[in-house]
Image (cartoon, rainbow, N blue to C red; front, side):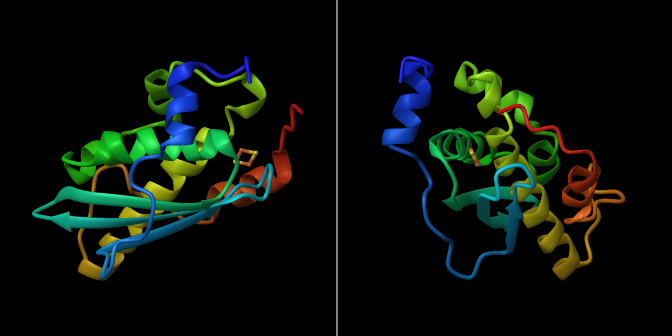
Length: 150
Ligand code: FES
């Protein structure tokens, strides 16, 4: 466990925002093409602001820690600010993950993006950062150009 810093361990042991929002405004799932793990994010959105976010995952400890901080980071933010969140921001907030686990942090930001996409589809809204977004596109790209570092 020495590979993981205290903040990662803390979010893994006591993750924030676990579960599923009832009557969520947007739901997104993402399956990692690298490890096959799954992430589901549900969002409550009011006046273009993320008022609540929860996650469920069949993912490893690094995915749990990443999603815990990622959901913390987007609650209270505008939808466009949430869309601007990258897995690099999540890694910085966590204080880093071992290189072979960095791909786990991607689950959270992809699932958030796809939950916002779901919301945008349902409401007919458009957001900066969603142009041309296809919830499955990244998965397909990875299927062909996958780099597994483990
Ligand atoms: Fe699959 Fe971490 S999310 S190994």
